[in-house]
Length: 222
Image (cartoon, rainbow, N blue to C red):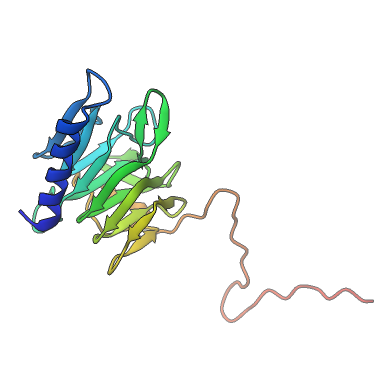
């Protein structure tokens, strides 16, 4: 158990023993130790992700937990179809302390793995299933007093990564909007990985056609 994880559990224990949770239904800590593929309801003071978390929300809106003050995504593993510490959520993730219908900042938010948000539209052609990442409503939003991320954060080409906090540490980290090489774990052919899609309202304007034949606009006589 590394230093960050020990500190995380100590903070959670102090909060639960000293103050208590926000409601009767709120549990002290939610620990994900096995791959998750269903957007379950998480109502916990602390959320610790130690496994693969790959879900698509049935409502089409970003996933959010309730009453969560502390969050940690553990280190990412390699060599597995469902790598630990990897979170892939369609269409997005919002990290707030949602209490009684209001959004407040969390206390601590730590990412040691990889977090990806995007939206995929799937269709079948014969026996093959294809997935196009169109980034609809793709968002990764964090609001916490203390934010530490040592692992990459991704959102779709049309997406948004927004971090709000008092102390934010992104040392040796990467933030990216666009296609990612992180596996979705489902073995689907992803067209959006190799074909860039423009944002809504943006259209390509061709400057040439054929071989060495730029399109010359007519010059208006003054």
